[in-house]
Image 1 (cartoon, rainbow, N blue to C red):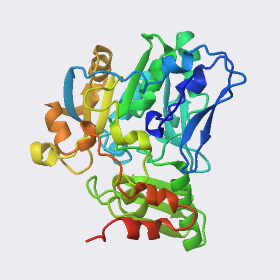
Image 2 (cartoon, helix red, strand yellow):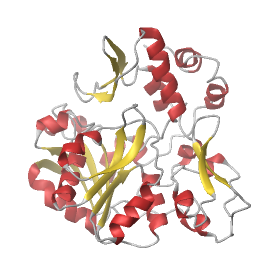
Image 3 (tube, rainbow, N blue to C red):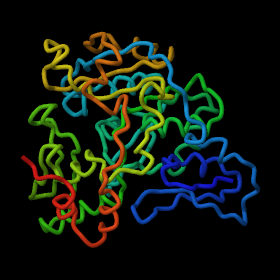
Length: 364
């Protein structure tokens, strides 16, 4: 039976709840809004499967990266609506065109972030673009296993710990599975996100109907985080917007994100993708401020997928050190903000703007 002695030891991947043969593990939100396993001990048969599949009990070792690229989708329209260079769309299309299913995070009708599977290109826009909230995963791992066992091709995308959780849950390799993870700075809770939505609605008098975490109207590097309602547009450049500042300064992220077990060449995914920050300094001729994806190839299967779509891209060959130079989350864990606990202790009584002003230095 899992014994969670510290919240830093759980990434919320749901592998334990998904594998439990008695269904006696429920993922329950704590006071911060993050989900953790709660075990009904009266139903537990001590089979040990939850411990066997937990990615933080079986942390991976560093491995060699086969190849590293900076890549841009040749379709500028897709690239504009993507967070970086639009490479996820190409990987997903390759699987969809072969009759497969693609899993990723979407905003549902209530603007909540959840994982879902799609089978057509018309649905692909739902999965495109970053969503800076930990996604709901209920039932997803079982759905993936069912498709794989039936011989269907699956591309599963998510954070590195979600990929690790899926791999642990499956307990064996599937030739018809390809995985793509995104370099992750950490994940804020849905409680913080929903508080922000509620406070914007209170300020504007209208419910938020659309969220754009990385709008590129002013370019990739000056991307904005926007919350839209019928008559209001609330937001700012991502490093100035309240919700994103609290996230990027490690105030609102999950405890386990303090020491990521899956970055710095420890990803279990076939391909890792990220923003190629610094490409304008390293390869200025390649940067047009529309977005470049850093692509790390971790496995031969990942190389095969990249080779399948590379004729629909422009790309350069780079290396791990260059890719990590300006995107620190590629290789480092950035820790928790020293006032993180104060933030969550006061989350129910103060606004996010008040907490931002108390905890973070003034914007220059």
